[in-house]
Image (cartoon, one colour):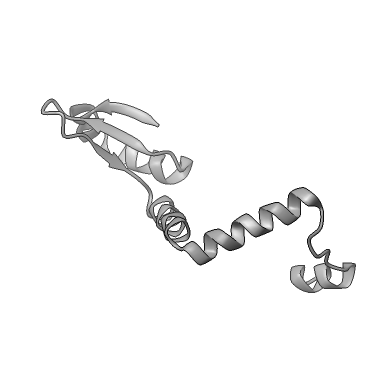
Length: 90
């Protein structure tokens, strides 16, 4: 995360917004009053919202846990080569 003063952010607004978008790196602007703010690209914000949705959804988290367990045990279903080609449209 890039941290800088709000004055530096304001003086170089376009540069830092472009950096947040291109590098997918959040920027934290520090205010004297202590009321800092974060700049994220819309893509990063949407990705974070999806993550929060999954973390709040008990059913999805249960599926993730079960999938992780079968992966660690190497006991999950294994797609055939044809299935992988169909998924990847090869």
